[in-house]
Image 1 (cartoon, rainbow, N blue to C red):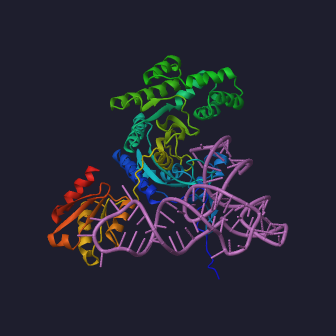
Image 2: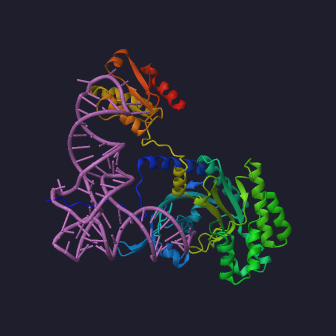
Image 3: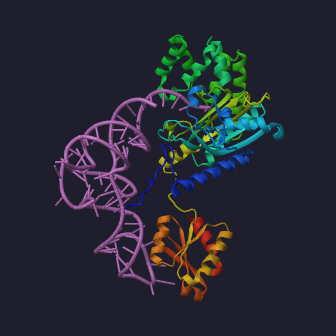
Length: 443
RNA sequence: GUGGUUGUGGUGUAGCGGUUUCUGCACACCUGGCUGUGAACCAGAGGGUGAGGGUUCAACUCCCUCCAGCCACCCCA
């Protein structure tokens, strides 16, 4: 008789995270959290499951098909959240009187979408959102750009670009061209520029709106105008400053650019780009997308914008806001491909070798002292051969090994071994902490 | 979701409608050689045809369905 066995496997689009991926992932989350908190965004969380009616119908039939939906044991119609924005809208409608405005929150957690998988796209993935609601002040739009910039910097990227645009400018521009009624279709087509190229965007514009090819080309030419931030602003003011909407959008962009400059951020990193449209209908003002200089083809890793009314479906209270979302898993995939991730499979840099089983108390005591100083330490669980313990330590990615056997205990010393360099030094027991600190700092 | 493509120990590969619970190779893993120092060496062990069905005297090999991966398209609040 053979034992019946369940085949171990994971669902399509879902994946396991092993330590070499999970360690940097947690590290990223810490960095992101730190930046959010440094700006005063407060953490919130919401349930993974919501009543289906809360989530449904926010993006049309197409989007509804992507929602994981089922009946719970009480017969309730429930669904897994597919982003963090819609639950936040519900959350805001429920608690805004308690919270007061303006309210700044960040929210990091998994979301689920039953869409087909593709490169860097999964059915379960994490988003890191931050928003400021309850204010229309441009200061919040500007801060959003600064947060995105600081995020990318904190994550260790040297070459990146936060591209900024404003829907008011786009809409004003379309108004002037007499195309206002086609705004949604045109912007949606424009949003695909990076992916399908100029000719196909023009084709799609003509097809969807029945405007002439000449007009489509005009829109595209304006949207892809290049130059310094100042040059772009100047040209916009010249050509469209007479349009009320456009003028307001230009004013807000100009202030953003000026503040960014004043805080010492280079034009290369925060740059105007009129072709950034975002597919979403609900953005009404400033919009943001972020591209990696070393990996432009993975698309935007942090996107967002300003919206007029976050929670209109759940409350009469008008809640304008601005925010953005960092695609953690896409970013992690990019960093993996750029070899920006360390290889270690352990979060503890130090391994205490268990030389003699009857000295366990000494080993744990030493480990404890280092841990209290904030250093991660593992004590090897078995009194195996020293060589094997070194092998284990090297494979796991520990950087230092601490060794003490009968000889060392007799003299009151420990050996501190640098595993990569295969060099060890002997230090007094009281000096171990500083020796470890020095060795770790040197790496 | 549509189309294409792939699926052989943990990983990567090679072969074949035919004896033998597939066989082979490389790496990894485990044990020992080796109770005071880890990249070598030697010996040994464990582990596999993604799942189910069909054709056939006989299927890892051919066919079908499902599952999963990859690529392209679609979509992306």
